[in-house]
Image (cartoon, rainbow, N blue to C red; front, top):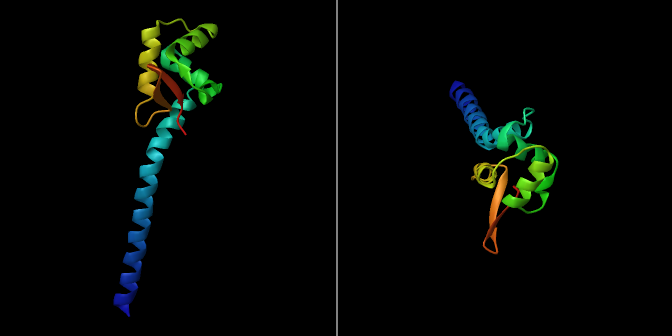
Length: 112
């Protein structure tokens, strides 16, 4: 009887540990993304892109030149290469954006 109780308790612990480990794997990336999205200090090229992200600009495809133009309208003045670098960093495997190549141009869109 004691062995059954101990076995039941250990099995319960194993299940809880597995559930916690699985939850941590999923939420780590989500936490990093949410942290970026909720960033209040929109300074620098990344901050400008996050500002545009919060405005819903990336619900449709945009090139780096289009993003540069939209950033300039909001007062963010950067070279195209700087904007492109920030977009590339935000479109890495666990980033907010997805980079797609269309007609020899890279376009960026919100990751689903």
